[in-house]
Amino acid sequence: MEVQQGGAPAVEVTLREFTLSDADAEVFMSWASDPRVARFQRRDAYEHVDQARRYIAGHVLPHPWYRAICAGGVVVGSISVKPVPAEDGRPFRASMGYRVAHAHWGRGVATRAVRAAAEAVFAAWPWLLRLEAVADVENPASQRVLEKAGFVREGTLRKYIVLKGRPRDMVMFSLVDTDRRQQMKPVEASGP
Picture 1 (cartoon, rainbow, N blue to C red):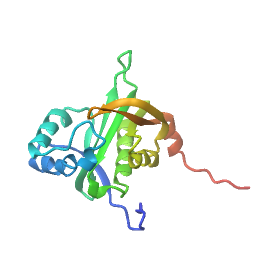
Picture 2 (picture 1 turned 120 degrees about the horizontal axis):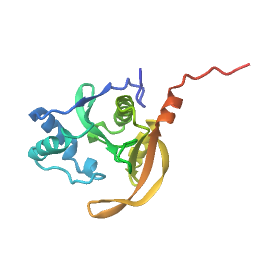
Picture 3 (picture 1 turned 90 degrees about the vertical axis):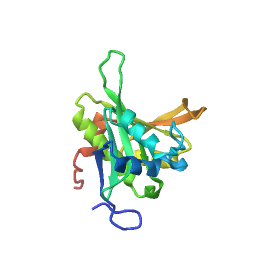
Picture 4 (picture 1 turned 45 degrees about the vertical axis):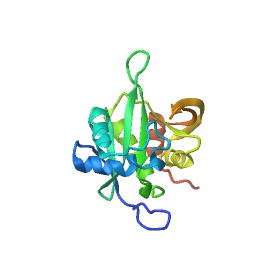
């Protein structure tokens, strides 16, 4: 059983596909309309549930791997993984992004969702050698999520993306197939 920082049992975190339903659009708004969550995203906070419906229909459903993050059976965020095209056209790496409703920050939900998503895509995509994610240099909480989930900090990419008209420095993290195999090895007993 996983335990939260305060000693209470951690809530179960699962992933599921989104649907084009009013319920999913409404719950999507719990983080999509929050400026604290949207701060490090390319888009601004949504103001109307119709924006969430259009986003789910036009972006989420056609996406190669986009899931709802559920904590205790309730949708509290989303996570996506997208293959990155290689020069020869054969993918070998993918990029991950995630967002969690503010009410669920600091509870280990994002870390468990990132771990679950990594396991799922490495299992589903045998060609996947590298899973990467970036976190804004001003978002240490997201950086901690990735480190706790087993990702390796590789370095800072200066002026890597433009968010809301401003160039941003990002910290690159990765999880490669050999890291995963090493993490999954049973710990050998040491001693005389």
